[in-house]
Image (tube, rainbow, N blue to C red; front, top):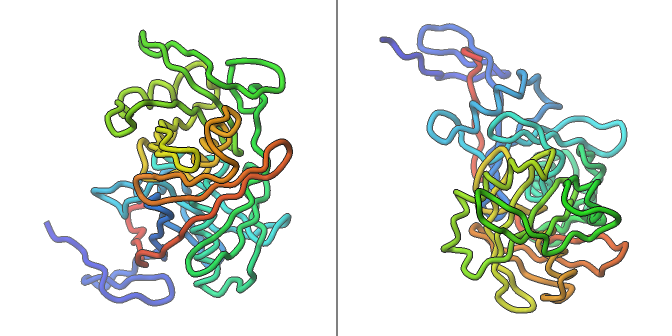
Length: 302
């Protein structure tokens, strides 16, 4: 069977070897500490329906490959708006690694040269700030500790929800839960490399105790200023990094009294530095963002 090959691009269209015109979408592949994204510019181009499109281009065998899709939009309430789609096509509230990647995209593509901007997300407005070469500091806002607002059916009142037992597939798991605009469950383990994340992660993600599902962080406390983390992200699976998860891990660990107010989170794809002064203070996350490559995706079969 004859395979069409896009050969010539102009103004968002591709001319294939049968001289047929196919509309294309420009994309940028980026990552933050190994948490990888496809960034789509929804200001400069018209995008297809994203629930199904995002799952196709996220596929690592038949698509571009990504943990999540970041979509740039105009905002009436901030400088820009970011939409976030998981690899399964579901939309989520916030992604801390993603906000750093989007900010670098905006700077690299001449949308802004400001040292700090405001970005609207489903969880509210987030403010990333330039912190040096390819390093970005994000004011993640105050952590949400009240169980009903996380949301989780575990616990009650104002929180925090710390060291709570949960039955998972006949096993007793002890977890803490924090929201950073999206829900997280934090589980301390002895050996994070050996822990069965692929088995336990999806069971907790979809547990009835978390009505909106939950991201699950498995952590090993190395010292009072360093934690090792693996993350099972809802709708995606295990990823190399999760920025909001690192913030939730830091907050839960600080509340448990096992780390200092500034801690390095060692992820499989890199390191993030998290600072929190406690009480009503914002959580600050500093980490890298990198552009990997750019390209065009044909929409002939979309």
